[in-house]
Length: 419
Ligand code: NAD
Image (cartoon, rainbow, N blue to C red; front, side, top):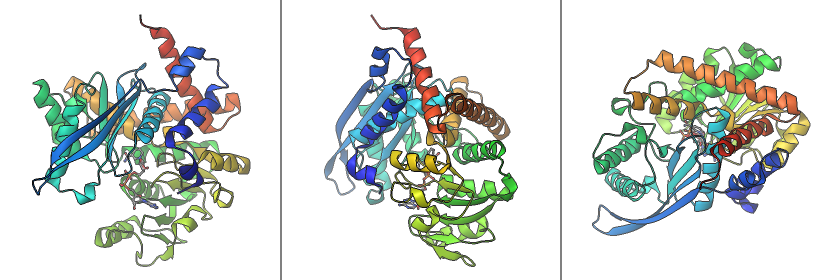
């Protein structure tokens, strides 16, 4: 964990990021103040019957930060460390992410304090159904649309959809995204976040004079995002020289083979010890001599403690919040280009948007159609952020926040104040 995690809450960091950009913008003071707060937060306590017959009480949250541009959108995480403060921060980041991408959504997030690895499938199903019931007046296809996050998956989304539809008395696939394909999930969702990251890397390479096929890349995290980034970049001819997960990492000067990494992961649960590769720690991975670094694991990895030793020319943030504000300043002084999370990893929420649209139309697209539409939105958003950074002379992160805050503020101004 970086220094921020110890000193500042996630919501304090989110406010600091917001204030630093909003202070420079010409935004009505009332609107500026409103964007600092979630529109509303729900905290629930609810009982779940456990497999041994006892009843356990769980705490859950759903926070809607802003709905000026459309319904709330954001995942539900199941984790022992979930707090209202964290959910509030994550909901605010979702508002900016939706706005940067030009999606007609606001920002929201939810969470339940629990530890899924210790729960049976039946307990997770009962917990999910009861939590859904508790927040069923908040969520809905036109009000707030959850999605998977840490320790929640397409099956959990299927249970949310079924519970909500049963309660409301009509099939409502648009109440959640990230569903299994037979229940209205979108083709192309699984690889969408990685595809978006690679599109950003490709556009940045063009812009900053790097040759895509010759890039040397390091990737932290080999889950959904990291493993797909590795295999797509490998197919473009890039050399992935380092990969690490929670257990450990591997290094190969001539490039690692994605098939060997995935085989090792399947066999042992980690990429550590992949045959033919040298071993590497997470700390070493982040400081590897490479062109591109993709942190795709957890938050607070690049901090004031290691930023000065980062050698990558470009960082594409796959994870949410992998770089602390202090590290950002150090990287900027060193001339390292950072493609911020709200842009780089927004391919996932973009295809979630496509899923919602397909659900509302009851008309489903081919995988190629999904890829083509994602390509268009990602390249347009990347160009808009880059142009803003150029115009204002700021980092890509400040430019993304600038665009997002101005778009949300404009929608709030047009809607006016009720009554
Ligand atoms: P995942 O659970 O599939 O994979 C996480 C990976 O990170 C695993 O390889 C795990 O071993 C590794 N990891 C966990 N803790 C680590 C640590 N302390 N040090 C090094 N490695 C560690 O998750 P994912 O879906 O790939 O998501 C990764 C990140 O991307 C998260 O921050 C998530 O919020 C973000 N993200 C994901 C999506 C998506 O569509 N999946 C969309 C936007 C953002």
